[in-house]
Image (cartoon, rainbow, N blue to C red; front, side, top):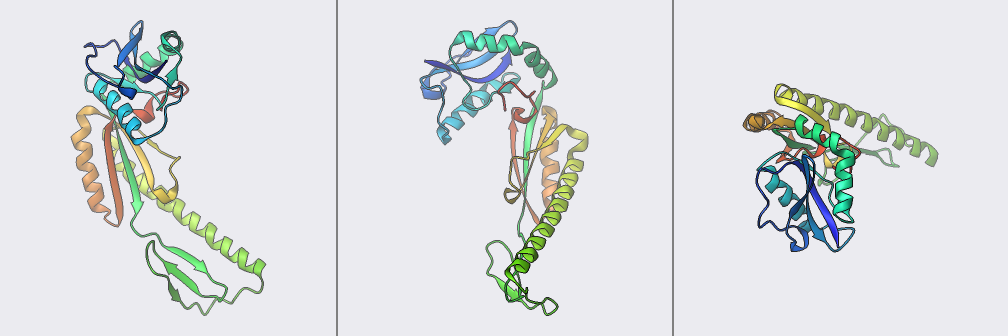
Length: 253
């Protein structure tokens, strides 16, 4: 048997009762001085990624969060036994205590911004420029000022020039969107981060750390932002534990 760690928290205000985790195992704590790891027994050293397991992981963290501050652990954080968990808490106790104090009474909100219509441009061998949006039928437009490439090499260079020009336009678009969003929440946001692991085609993902008392104000400002930029699609998620704002280097995410 192994121990699965869901989150780190301070000394529990109320004991955990009748809470089930992964593999329908009872949830309990492993404590070291003033901090505690919320754990349950599992039979595997690596937990399969599935919708059911991810929801269970989030549900345990969410239940503890409703009672007190938590530092969420990365999915599938598994230790050999209680001794391994205690050693982990001991080695990181100063960081955990600092994060619990720094992030006290905060929540994380997520925003994803997606272009409703992404324009693409290609140059064909016949010298015809084709512009199309996602999900649209291609429409050929004449470009009399552009001569057909003289060779495959010239065609390749022409296409690469267009490709890099589109990247520059995308970078400018992303910069303006991020700047606008940050300005919308500037005075109620403790900290913000952009998720650079998300591909551009999936949209721009932004994470905001806010005080829990600012939740309604954040939602109102999000709705104002969405209404003012109706050419874009906005998605909002949360409130979450501060996944993106815990200190790095300890297996949490």
